[in-house]
Image: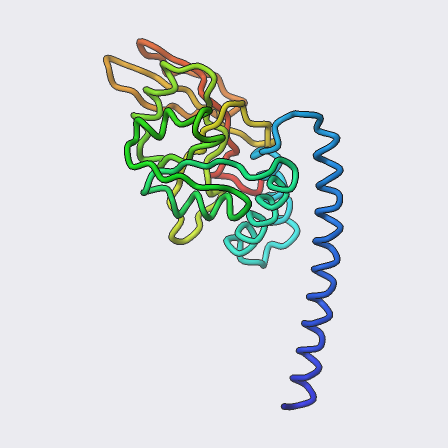
Length: 223
């Protein structure tokens, strides 16, 4: 082993120690945040998106998929620390995305029936993860049911092998600073989700239109 290689490995070991110390500090502050929230929602997809955008701006040369993957573990661990284990339900087609997004500190329930999955919140699950391609079923369900909303679209950026999904919960998402408002629209029996930038007016109308949630704008992660 060369002296140079030994030196480089020593430098990596030193950096690992610094990272661990910083993580310990972060989770210590996270515990204080839990007390300060005073019962408000622990899952804050808007703040998470804002953090990811800030980190991408600070480290433009770092692989975005790597960065967001690391912070998904940090976010998930912080939520588990503040709230305990979340109950997550997912369709088989969204299970990989659900595991990627929530990472750890949760219990997973796989439901093959889409109707059963959409009805899992809030009784059976805190959040459900539904493939975005099931847009028609999601729109129809949220049109006729109260107290459930889309709180996030994940991933915020394109990540290899991770299929885009909507996360549905029983509260509205917090603002990220660059958001998209979602509306369920039924027009002659056909349901769809209409996406409208938060600074634009809804122009598409149908037989029935309903606001069903707000998600971070995934098309402009650096905004």
